Amino acid sequence: MENKKLTTTNKQKVLIASILAGLAIMLGVYGVSKAGAFEGTGMNSLASAIASKFNLNQKDVQAVFDEHRSQMMKQRQQDYKAWLDQEVQAGKLTQDQEKLILEKRTALEAERAANRSAHQNLSAEERKVLMDSHHAELEKWASDNGIDLQYLLGFGRGMGRIGDHHDRGFEQ
Image 1 (tube, rainbow, N blue to C red):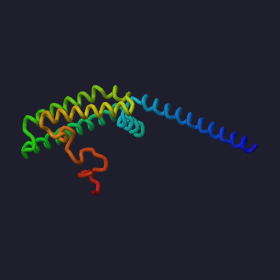
Image 2 (cartoon, helix red, strand yellow):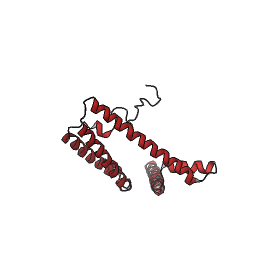
Image 3 (cartoon, one colour):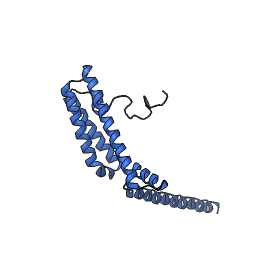
Image 4 (cartoon, helix red, strand yellow):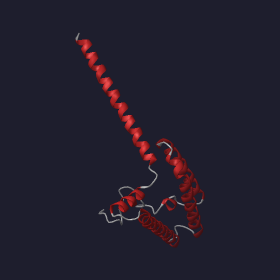
């Protein structure tokens, strides 16, 4: 009799666990579908929130965000070019290598923009495989041209790495 009661309790636990797992899966699917349905970026929603909060025209606020984004991108490109120029002056790169790097980065940015929406539909594993393959191609390109990969990927140490906040107002 006690065995039967224990079995019933176990069945109830399994049933409850199954229901909770099913609910978690449904909530996960719902969350992913809502996230996928969101067409804008975080900045677009911020612009919308600011426009709504201060009773402004959303297109005007978005235009300010877009202009700021464009200026920041232009500044990053100028900083990157200046850094490469310093590396050429220091003898770490040749003028030809600098030109190759700038051309390759332009091509990579265009490729990234063209594939952005397609890559969003990939699973995390598929994205990792694609990134690993792409990284191997970049390593080969850099090796073939006698260029350290750091010059193609960024300023080296501190370029957007998590936990590395040099020159960003954070204590070291």
